[in-house]
Structure formats: C-alpha cells, structure tokens
Length: 289
Image (cartoon, rainbow, N blue to C red; front, side, top):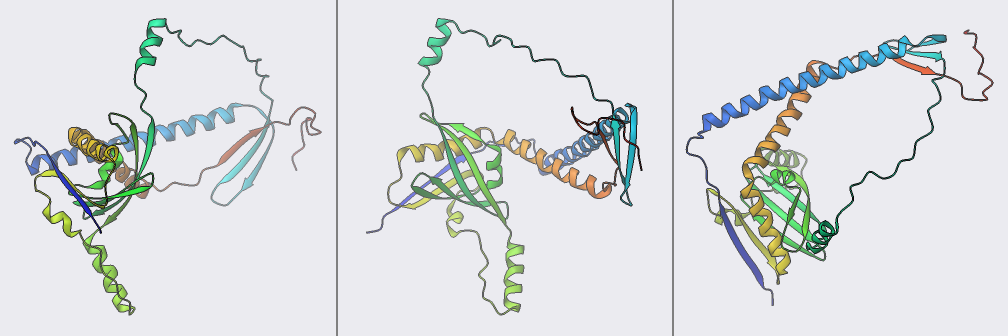
C-alpha cells in the first residue's frame, strides 16, 4: 500500500514597512550603477597592467628579434639575456603556531560534524515557485516551495546538529513564455509538447511567507528532515544578505557583458622574450634572416 508523507512549513518573513516598490527599484538602479563603475575600473586596471607588462618586456635589450605578421596583430620573438640564476631555496622551520595543551583539549572536545554533499535538482518557474529534488544517499525527497530557487546558490554550506551540509544546486529556469513558444514550435513540426507549468501543490502554500511542502513516498529519515528544515531556516534568517549578494553578482555579470559588447576586445601584439637553455647549440647570438 502506498503511503504519502506530506509536510508543509511556512517561515514568516518580516518586511520593513518603509521599503515600498519604488525603494526597491531605486536600490536596484544604484546596484546597477555601482556594477558599471566597478567593471569599468576592473577593465581599466587590466589595461594598465597589460601595458606595464608590455613595457617591462620591451625594456629588456634583445640580441635578436623576429616578427610574425598575422594581419591584425603581430607576434614578436625577442632573444634576451638569461635572467640571473634563482638562489637556492632556504629551508626554514615551520612558522605554524604551537598550541597549548589547553587549546588542544578545547579543540578535541568540540563535536566533529562531518561534511556531506547534497545534490539538488531545482526547477524554477517564472522566478516565483521552485520544485526541488533533494538527493541524499539512497533516497530522493521531492519539495515544492514558493521562493526563487536561484538563491540556493547563495547558501553554500550550513550546519545541523550533527553534520555540515554542502549544497550543490543544479538549476533550470522555466518561464511560461518560453514553454508556450516551445509548444507552438512543436505544433508547427507536428509534435505534441505539454508545457511545463507550476506544480499544482504550490497553490496550497501560504502567501507572504517562505514556505515549502514535502511530498514523497514512505518515511523520511529524521536527519534528512532536520537538514531540509535547517536549509529553509538559514535562508529565512539570512534572506536579505543572500538576496543582496546574489543580486549584486547578477548586476556585475550584466555590467561585464554590456562592457564587452560596447568595448569588443581588439587584437593585441604578443611579445615573447626567450633565451636558449644551458648547453643549447643556439646559445650564441643568432643571425636573423
């Protein structure tokens, strides 16, 4: 006989009454402006470093030089004087701090929490509802939640009472617009395609709070239930920081892409300084052709 285990938990999020939609829009615009400035500065520093490296290479006197023309750029080969031999490494005693007996006893008394990797397959529907397959050892747990599962990337590791969980989410974002377009295209080709939609279970979840529902066959280990609860509690307790960090990363990636499109990389000359090794028949100064 099939048994179904259902559990839904709502985690209340307290929102500041002084954070209206226009305030969130302003924060997003400020983040985008900051990202553009950071990416511009990042590329300016990279350009400066490349120019300094080029200058350092060309400062070294060359006994011979060859140029290979590639049309849009050149490769410049320069034979230079070998650098001085590197000094022999000096062996030193370890500088690691020595623990006192009291410190060692304290460390050994702390309970050890083994690390366990949890693989999550996450389908995100229109950035609002997520379907999660929690894979752990020999069982899989099906979870429906009403928050954007992309933010699971910002959690990383969390601790429970007995272990440390390293979460590795594998994400796929599904939009109703894309699904409708796929279905229309399949119909044109004479194929049947059923668009993936928000799971019906999500409609029963409460509004205005982060909530999830577990629906799976048979019993679930207590340690797994604790881990799932700890994951959602961690997100709720750190939601502002997680969302801010993820949104900032998204803004930086968008700014980086926009910068590349507006400033496509131009071909640059490659400068290679070289010298023959010890015993080489080319140790003498060559005569360029």
